[in-house]
Length: 207
Length: 169
Image 1 (tube, rainbow over the protein chains, first blue to last red):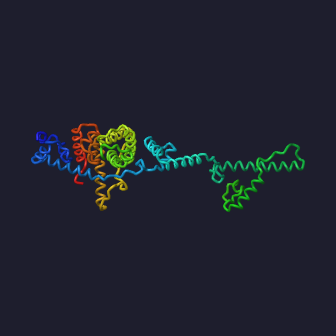
Image 2 (image 1 turned 120 degrees about the vertical axis):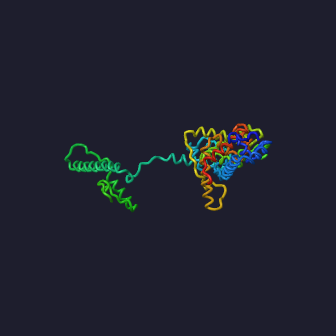
Image 3 (image 1 turned 45 degrees about the vertical axis):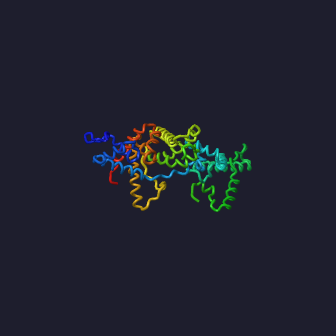
């Protein structure tokens, strides 16, 4: 009783009220609490408040743990993340432990590793001309125009040589325009959508 | 679980994983932190089982859990946590009517928010008692404090919560 007596309208050791609710009183304390609760309205009110709070806490829904956290769960995306060095230390250790014990996952891991290596070993490619940016395309057109001029100059020079008007060596074309044109026509005949002629490209017009 | 038997870490994961997850979730209000803690605890258990001598398994496990939690708190010190509403998909128990579900979810959110405002020393004792369901003695072992201190923290923690919540809900 001593610890639950009134002290200036306040009761000491109200911890006993929670212990009482939890069935955690020590020998001899039960009588003390029960006797006090019969004549202290403050403590009765406090007892009910704590009882209500305790009940509310105990009705909190129990959440399901994500199944992936069980050591027996086969890792999925974690295998790729492991290959890429993207797992946190603890998770990495757990996945490695699983790999040490699971033949299936070890096999999958090696397959993923091979696939990842294969993808990473693909050569880098230049984009096709029609996928180039406008700026790149403008540069390409500029280059193409100069090639036509050069080719025309070459042809004129060839004619000049043929008629014996020039004595010096003939300049040569940087590309074989005829061969390029043949290739383009052949592809246009096979691919219906591929109808943009070098002339259109060089003039910047839509087909 | 018989105290004489030393479980494997897979056993611990199956039997205690959900409790550990709920403990961490109620202390942090964050499912990712709760998942991290479960993984951390399982690894520590796996390493610690070799040296474990049969005794109070719960006390041993929850001491490990609590230490892992405190280490996690230190790591996350600069990362603020926010109370999240309970994810319906994670609810282990089905609730009867939509109204009751809604009221229950609101109550859970209120309590969760209030829990996060209670100082950690008190919060962990309340959670270990009312969420995990440990005895005062087991809690004392887990938090490495005398039973009298645990008793006081549980009561004061509940009082703080009661004052933080607007009743009747």
